[in-house]
Length: 206
Length: 259
Image (cartoon, helix red, strand yellow):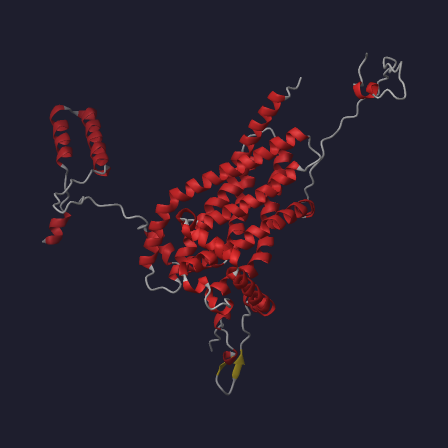
């Protein structure tokens, strides 16, 4: 007698038993941990998600937001690469927070604080320029990739969504690599070395 | 008959010529070497990719074959992979979490590896601390983003899937103009990241030291201060003669040296 394992995805309360109708064999369903978290999450967060979506709706209908949207739609440079611009804005906010923290750090002397803050700013600007450059260079390649993807999966469900996901993934990979890898590993040491050199020239030791 | 014909091996004319010339002029080991060289040359020539002759084309376009991008079997397989499709859908819906997830790979693997590998003035302990700091910041960033941004991503998804449910005004610009709606959707999608970046930064700064201490067992060592041996110093050279209670200039100008 074959006892088939019921996969959690197709698990249904109706198929809890197997075998003959006279001798039913109960099968313990493989309960997916992931699924249980998903259902729990939906139960817990469902109302708050709806509330948040309502807030988004209210925000989108506000006059200020409408002005921002119409302004962004008028300019092609902003409209065509909006996701990347918003990513950069997020990073700019975070960088300015760190720069502010450095400038208010009382453990360092004033000159060093200023040099370090300038370094942080320069690192952000260089990484941003590099990010935009690579993003533009990869545009054609990703466009071809998406074209090929669409032809291969013609008629697929959520095809547009997936194609957009590929474009977003490209931007995330490029900008994340610039801010989280290239900037701290390659740009910051160079900027620090330049800062130290300027500092030493201003106040020569020995 | 056809099978027999296909079995006939083809000798390229240049190799035949080389063989014949070797037969005619040389004998013994020199002949063998010449034959070997001839075969080697032939093999090289067979592997060499020759440029295709340009065909005559009367329609004004080049007849040479253009290289088709992404036509390899591996890429085709990847494009048709169901997991890849699901991953791209998730990236589209939860880009607020996908970014920190990719950053976790960078800060957890690549950055520590390059910090340890790159030459620098820092000593090994400092490098290890910097690596642990990088991993810690990546983990914290990912966890905070997952907790904060997954529900927000779901809310943005719900808003963009059924905008009519959440837009109360009937004559709203979002319902009239599809382009405006798409722009609004993108801005709303990224807004939590912009607003949440500062609290995320504060939390990361606050959580990194305890995580480094209790998870990695790392604590940044303070530079050791060497105790100087006691040396008797005479302060008789300090000159306080002529000090008056109201004379503030003496204290202002006092630099600690001899007068």
